[in-house]
Length: 148
Image 1 (cartoon, rainbow, N blue to C red):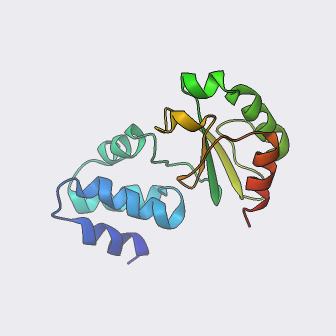
Image 2: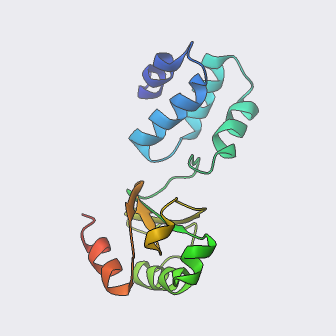
């Protein structure tokens, strides 16, 4: 029995149990490994393709291995107007990756997201779901340096 089995079993019988299981697995591993998808399908009595469909439907969930720090850049209009494009280019330059990629050391993954709901403090990024407001190039360097 794997760690996935315990997580999945704890979510059985709950409304939206498979989604809850996927969130818990991702919280532990930063993504949903293929083995976990297969186990979830078996435990919830659905085809593997359906389990994969659930895991890939929600943008927050990922079936691709990701870095320890998941940076999400808001791409909504207010952030765009406030300089998100330049900030994104700066992140790509500092990290040496493009959107959707993970650094070679497995430390950072860079993703885009829709509105974070903090339009009063743009541009906004999140790192592992923790928001950072009014981000500029100097503040970005400080934020990234704090990720250990």
